[in-house]
Length: 616
Image (cartoon, rainbow, N blue to C red; front, side, top):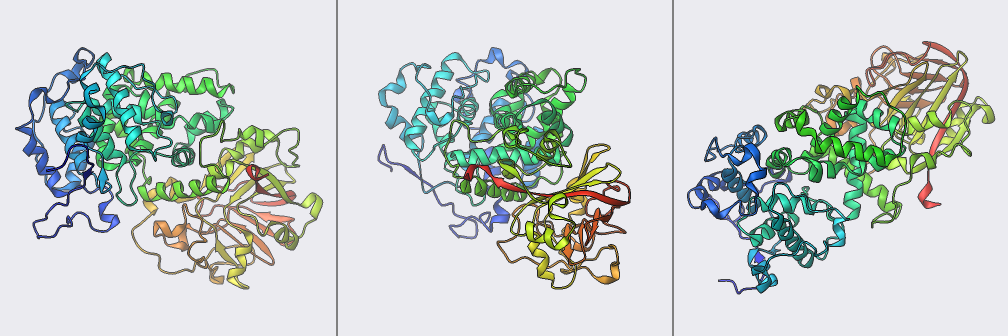
């Protein structure tokens, strides 16, 4: 028996096989969203012993609407994880508040936690006699919630004060938390399904103390939170293109708008929608929040399509507009429709989110941004100062539009002109000498017909040397090609738009081929491997198990040409050694049409680098 005031220690569960290590705790891949097998049965076992008044004590039932009427199943009868996951998505327990409370408690109890994790008894010891008194909502919340209030979520007025008391106790037991703006919303939600404050505290503590490898449930540092905002910007850029274009066109600071993405879900959504998200979030984890936020952005764009005013305005107004839309979404979008849209977005996986999150964290660490500052991000327009920016191909406004396409971790940088034919002459060797050592780079071309096109190139041109004298492809799936005139359009890696190409079949080999000026498929363009640790961490072809001959020929160069995009019958861009003559055509890597006239003369060619403005 434990002495009051001591901390809870995570129990080890005996398995049928006799081992103290649960069979579900295998390798990381198997444990991503796997819950212990006892979980599913435990949901049924507690159903008969949980009293009617053991949950919902904090709920104002007059505000719950249809959710106040319990109906549907009264127990969960499921043995397979896949089936249980499907039940969560389909809302199997969504109409029965009591069953939902039972399921939540078992899900939270099954979370692998630190050896020492505060529990309900710790809360009672800490709060002491004050726990019997009426809580005070005027008690300020910890600084790490970043000013976010406790959403009421159909709770009684006194329950909001209870949430304040729980959160302040959490702050005392988790001194390592430095930034957790989602905690008020999560605490308010969990009060719905707790018999008292102490149980709510235990549930919150287990979520915060989750130590499953590769999994997190809540951001607890500014670095994690900020990189999450950048990751959302990257995901919105790739999987929500139309809505992203709308934000770019209307908001002065896109990054400032996307900084609210987590609050849209955990704070602004109505309770009826948020509790359905919670159903799935507790089963599948953090990636659900990204999916739902992207779905909200898609619905917002649809909502704004009928609007007349698309002029750029203050970012604060756009943030308020999105917040108002999300808060009122119940009038146009049902909770089920929101989840359906969220899970119809293909390709977004935990693996890719993790890779991108790590890349953004590394970028912030390199810039010294690890704690909250008055303003950690730079407005993109400040980096592209019209008074100092000078290009013979694009205006500051056009460069701003291109900047909205690039990965978030580079949006903090300023454009730095590395090479231009207007100054350095038409020499491929000089192009290489000025561009080597820079990663990524932006290639811009204006033709003698006045067309403008280009490419974002993720890797250093020096990598071309790995192929020896052969023209060799390198780069990652962050590369893309685009055209600005006569119309503006971007063409990403084909796998982004067609996720079905990401097969489970391992690549047959490192070689690939593409046709180019003076060289056809028989020439055998090679794609050398980069040493481990040097690959760009996100969207490297190897993460998708692709056949490199078809869809991962990003960039190549040798002494007589540079190529962007290969596969099929052509290249997205081919430029000769004099940087004077070029070709463009469809390629399978980007599935693009010709970016300008198929055979063109180069008027001006520029290559831009990304200068770390924070390091100056």
